[in-house]
Length: 239
Image (tube, rainbow, N blue to C red):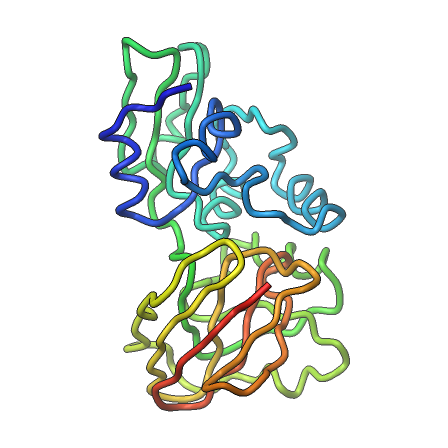
């Protein structure tokens, strides 16, 4: 299905993901990232993510419940497509939208998600969790602020998940290379912290900081994070 050129340009400009109909059909053609399938999630944990949020289908209605909106923001979903003029957003949905528009000549509408997290960002502190279910419970709690902290699976070393300092002033990384299996970033850290990448923590990903291999941690139940010391760093993720 051909998406409007103006819409595709907006998605490319923002760099986020889309969710809904006809995203699964059109995303690969337009070289945009779809929440359902273009980026391969770990299947079992992806299923836990969907169940925890209430989003159980590749053809979801509007999220409606606040927990669902928080999940989409965590996954860097910037756009939602809905089809066939039958799925009308509720008042609660509209509070979470930056924009909503019907496209009369096409069988769908789109909405922009307010406050979606960037695909890569830095935080100053981390919360340890023992399993994916605990991670999702923490992440979907209204008190959790993903712009300041990340939930990491503890792997028995929760001491490495301690807070450093306030996250104010942490800049976004500079994207150097953005390919399906090779991502390069430059990140300046005012103090030690963590870089979060909202790509699936799928077996086979490797990370390097300034040319040195570093461990990848499971972040926010589904994604990837690495620890970074203060200073400017060249970061590489390869699959």
